[in-house]
Image (cartoon, rainbow, N blue to C red; front, side, top):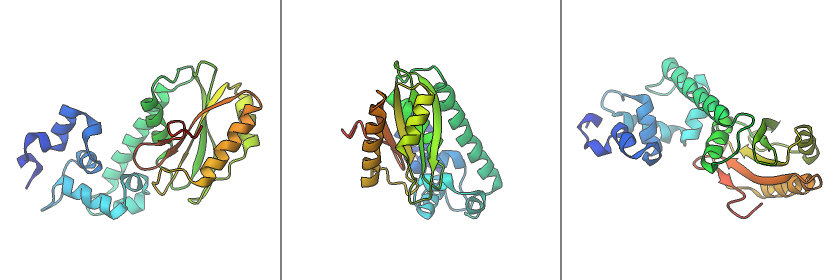
Length: 224
């Protein structure tokens, strides 16, 4: 059955307009991006097939051009369109969290971190440097690693925080696997960083892990 023959409140586009984008599943969001399906397959069916093929929405969004274009129904036009959407998201949240703006919304912070880190196929450890009123001073990617992890050096983090005259920091790193639960190593390095920065009265407000779904917050789980 074509999507246009579905009940109006079940069609992805109408559902988004009525209930907001957060109410849609990954497949429904992807279907809106795809716009049309293929012969005998609706856009939602095609989206579900792609999510099954890639394993997750994050993996699809992070796919390189060659891999992306090999999938049935996709190609250079869709790849270019997707890259434009991702870059607009990054620029939007960079503008929202530009230098001098205070962090007033956990949702905006999460969305910004997701836009910055979700597309990498390797681990990236980054930091938001903040002043004593929690206004943004600078965002920096500090360490890059393989898919198995990134080496994080507390001394270097402390040096960058002092360079920016930061009073507080928020850490973030991605898990290319999509799993957004902290590993034991994640917990240990967070404790080491907190101790190192504490020597300079620099507060660690949170550490986010960006994977599939909502980024994991150490603070919300009582780990900071």
